[in-house]
Length: 228
Image (cartoon, rainbow, N blue to C red; front, side, top):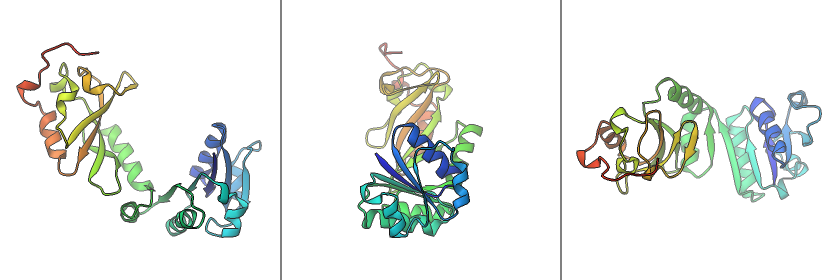
């Protein structure tokens, strides 16, 4: 696919390089021509000196045929404006804006504008590594009512069927990372020490997840052997 990247900082240049390595065509836009020095000399993509919300520059970058656009410059307002133009003027379906202010990112997310809040993402990444047993939201839908959290398997659930940790309509164990390998058959697996659970939780059910992780009812102990 053809991707337009707006902003050739560390994130934009790294994104552009990785996308071309995957075989995509990429055009990157930046108002500072010196920023392109972050790209390898042999980088095969297109460099456009200009603004991400200037239609002439977007046209030059191939926005009319683009399948995706990422606005990852250092300006929140510029990134949001760029994404809105990409959607409303060029009809680009897959867009994302990098936002530094997490409060504004949440507002835009609820308005249906995909955003990545740099500060929030970094804090969550650090927290998950410092305290993997704590609840840390990895993803939330636009309404904020559904979140995906990571939880280290509690000791009380080793030897129990992971699917029994869930509650219909409120908590679902979607996947498990075991010995560094992700698995999607989590609901049928017996918990093992070191498992990392990926759990979908509806709004208001995190406390219930905490209670169940604390041990859960005796009826949750599996009666039959399940895949390991």
